[in-house]
Length: 293
Length: 295
Image (cartoon, rainbow over all chains, first blue to last red; front, side, top):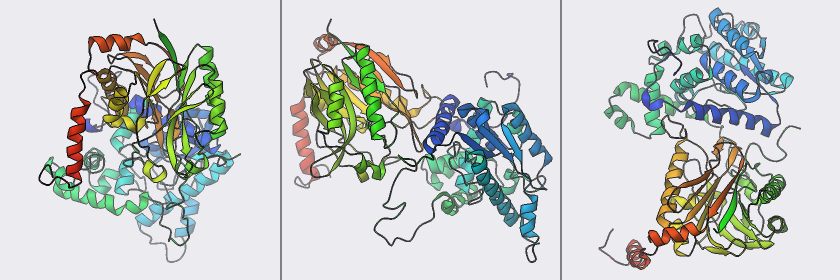
């Protein structure tokens, strides 16, 4: 933030214990992106650009890693998505100079929920369907663009389970999945993501005015501080409370983390044969002869 | 002055790609020799990549493998330290570091400490070595103490090697970078921890020390490089960059070890017999042979 006017308000709250060395994180994530592509035999990347901070950050990192000419940003609004989000996504495309494509997902989603018996589907069902339709669109563009699908989920949402299984969590690799939301904001500022995108309230953009923080009932800065203690420092919930955090909130977050374990792991396979993938057949994902030729 | 030019070959091995990595090693050896280096040191599992899992058996070689002999020949009248998966005659797999000189494999150190915690899972795939022995390099005219990565997270490794006669400690490493919390001197917590250890060992054993860490990416892991040479007072003699491949040259003044050991005779004043006596008691106590003491 050295270039910022000293009287300017910070763009976001950053708890001190979550501050990262952005140069190191930038260096590691961009090299990681290059290695994933090289080892898989793909020259390009495709990602879903929502107008939010997470996908904007990944777009900037990919552009830095392999050049904007190798990035395809797919904008996939639903009819209830905010026009402002689309405007922010278009601004990222404009600034990076990457290829982009607009795919309205409304007909796909509405075709399913328009069928008899599904018209009154809950917002949760509809939100999940939108995330999974976007996954279908991205993986189809993976073929036509010749690019790997980059994941854009952060550590906070993966830990509390604020993701759709096989939806937004589906990807070939994820450069920011070990960064808490607070750290995503910090790295975004360092790589030049537009300030308006960093500053605005995070939203799944499923209906007008929705924000993540209103929906789950706590701020990202707060949940990040608790998760960092529970997960990275291995404190027990009682020890976190002893550091001054609200007991009910710590308990709730601890349950959310446990309840989302299944979203973070490969589904179990019933062990029957002598050698079973993921159990006693253990290979790196990328190895000799595994790259696309 | 008895100067020894060394090349720290900070490479980015391709995971499981033995032939490619062998070719890369031969090329770096030739390059280093072209720049006058007498010893070329490569990182841990530089010939195979680190995160092998079940690939380990597929890239394993016996210590007399002709491909290693070919690398030894490439080192000419100098020497090289390379690291690979060694398969013993009874088919155990080891993480090995070999001293190549005189056209053959002069010495093999098998990694003793196999980390199996956190992001590491080495004991699942590898057998552990059983000791640390210094080795005299005839080609270089110096006694080496070779260890692999985690070996140096245990105090006895550098200490035993120095007591065994090593004047030049060598640690070959595949250290994944992690902990990018703000405030670390070089941006990576792992780097800071290693720097502290290495300087302490060089100073306490009054030895030269070479640390060669790899770069590149295996799956989720990014290796931070930062290979370096440290003098017997703990001073930095040369440092390779973080993250990028490099062939870092350094000239060691071998006589500096003698000067340091005369001026500050820490190694002379070690009391290994005291340590051995106390260790004997501790071991028998742990085994339950001496009731009442300790546990």
